[in-house]
Structures are given as C-alpha cells and as structure tokens.
Length: 352
Image (cartoon, rainbow, N blue to C red; front, side):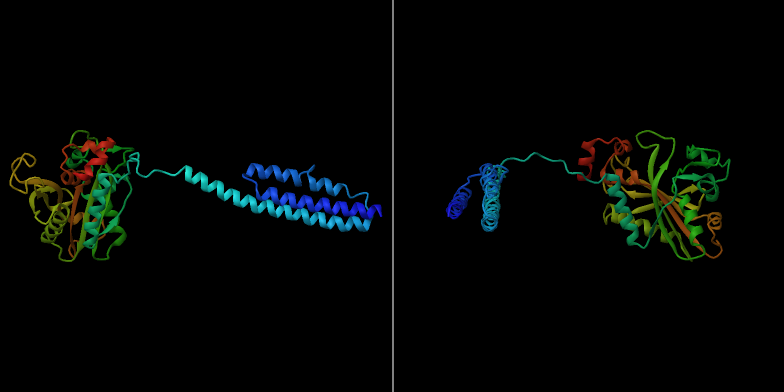
C-alpha cells in the first residue's frame, strides 16, 4: 500500500511539474528566460531528469508505467519550448527591424558609378557602324613578324616608309606591330580566294612617339574590302556613311591625294569640322576640314601577297586612329588624357 501511495504522490508531482512548466514556458518574456527554463526542466539536474532518476525504488511494473508518463512529460516540455522559442525569435526580429529601420528621407552618401572608358565607347560605336554595313571584325597578334608588318604590305627592308613608323623591335624579325594592317594579310590568306571580303581590324599598335597628338601605344581601326569591280567611289561612299553616323547627318568628307606603300592610288580623308560645321574656326585652322584617316585602293602586290589575283579583283583599305576619332567626337586637343586615368576626365568627357 505504501508503494501505491508513493506512486500516487509521484503522479501528482509529475502533473504539477507539467502544469508549472507549461505556465512558465508560455509566460517566458525572452529567449534567455526560455533557455533558463529548459535547463530547469530538462537539464542534467533538471526537475524531469531528477524525477526519472528517483524511480529506481519502485516495482518494475510501476516504474515502467510512470516512466512512460515521465517521458511523455519530457517530450511535451520540449515541444512547448520549441514553440515558444519560435514565437520569441519572431518577436525579437520584428523589434530589431523596427529599431533599425532606415530613414529614407535622410540624404544618402553619394556613390560614384563606374562607366565605360571614352575610347571603349567610341570603339563600340565605330564597330556598330561598320558591322551595320556588313563588315566583320577581325583580330591579329600585337607582337608581329616583320614580314606581315612591312614586307607583305609592299614595304621591303630599306624602304623609306619604314622611317615614318618608329618601331619597337624585339629581334631583327619580330616587333610590336606599328599598325593593324598586318591583319589584312592574315585575313586575306585565311579567306582567299573567297569573295567578298569585308572586315575591320581593331586593336593596340605601338610607335616611339609621345607628345600632345601622339602616344607610344594607341589604337587603330583598319578597314578592308575586296571584291570584283570595287572602286574609289565605293570607298568614298563607305567613309561618308561612317562620318554621318559618327558625327551627324550634316557631316561630309573629302579625299586628298596622298601616298601609302600598300595602296595605289592613295588618299587622305578629311571630315567637315565637327566644331564649326565646315565654316572655319580655330580648331580646323579656318579650313573647315579635319583630317581623320588614310585610305586608298589596295596595291596589286598586297593583293598577291594575300592570295588574290589583282587581274580579277580589286579592293580598298583605310586606317584610322581611334584616339583621333574620339578626340574629334569629344572636342579634345590632347591625346594623353585618354591614358592618364584622371577620374575627373573619365567621369565628364562622355557628357561633353
């Protein structure tokens, strides 16, 4: 009978522990209090752990019965703790977000947003114009053989035209390319005898120059067209369309006789002054014209070196400096500003 009375008391104690735990957990104000309650009831020395350890003096059948009830009570407390923990975490998060709310009416710290370099913007515009006319973009190595840079372009060793291009030689036969014209030969050899050929080659070139209008490294854009019955009229039409898309529909061009070893006949190309519209000003020195590129009909020897028969096909070529095009586009008078990395220039020149 003593065991039965002891069992009844233990059941009343277990019920009291469950009811007390439920009440305290439901009223826990924060997660720290809740953690203290977990330790109080479920810790190694907690009420439920101590209760389970005290069942050893009960008969086996009674111990099993009350042990099951005690484990159910333990699982109940664990569920209650987890539910209350979720409620408190959500409450604490809401309070923290409310306290940390950003006042969007306050003035923000200005952030400088990156933008494309003016040269890259100009290059993309040039490529867009020519690809819209059916040209493809070709590339070639910057470290080039003397043969492709000079000889194949009708500039043999000892030719005075080599003096016009102060070259960076690495060995007697290898140099940093002085123009993008070598891409013409490489492209023709990869395509011959297929027709038509319409391409532009863009990239860095190198010469031993450094002043307000020259840079030891600059960018060139080379154009090449080869087909049957290509004429100077086709050349002028392409360059006129380029000028109008780049500088406005009012722009016009003129061709002046010149000399280049790789073209015959050759011509310098001027565009009507972008500042005064051709009326004459200080920028164009009163002439109304600004020089932008060199051009001409591809020399027969260059066609032969590229794998084409000059008796059956003709072609024209032109070359322009990207920096020169950009300087006219933005009204600049010093090429060096493109390479000085002055952040003020980079953030304002595109808005001129």
